[in-house]
Length: 198
Image (cartoon, rainbow, N blue to C red; front, side, top):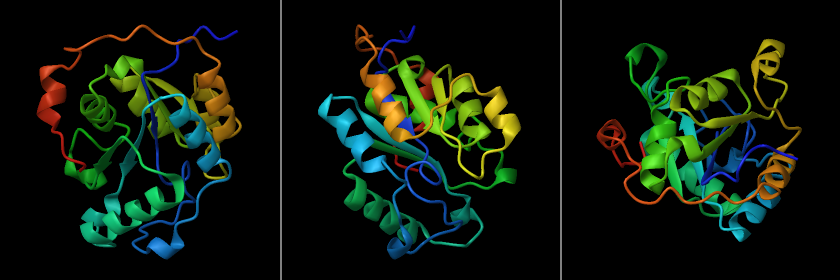
C-alpha cells in the first residue's frame, strides 16, 4: 500500500521518457513514442489526472533547431500521444544561468503555476537524475523510469523508480485521491517565472 496521495498533476520529461531521445531533433518524422506511453497517458486522462510536459531543449540555444522546428516536433508528440494540459520548456543552454533548466526547479514550478496547483502536489516522471533533482528542488515527488542512458548512480539515488510508464500510471491510479489545495497555491516567484510555454 502506497503512502502517497494521488498527485494533482503528472509532469513528464519528453526525450527518453515520452519519446525516444534523438538529440537536437527538429524533424517531426523522427518522433517515436516510448513503449506504453500512449496507454499510460490515456489511463491518466480518463481518470482526470492533468498531464504536462517539462523539457530541456538546449538545442534551440545551441542552434541545432529553431523554435518553429521545436514546436513542430511537440505538435507531433501531441498527434501521437494526445493533448497535454500544459507544456513547460527551457530553451537555454547549461551556461545561461537560468532557473528553469533541469536540474533547477523552474520548469516544475512553471508547470504547476499554469495548472494552478502546488508543486508539492505534482509528480515528475523522467529518465535522468536531473529530472529527479528538479522535482526535489521544487518540493515535488519524482519517479525515475530508467533507460539505457540512466546511470547506476542516478538509479541508486532516486527515491522512487518504476519499470515503465505503465507501472507509473498503475501506481498513480492506485493511490487515494488527494483533497484539492484550492486556489491561491501559487507563489509570487512562480508567477514571475511566466506563463508562456517556453
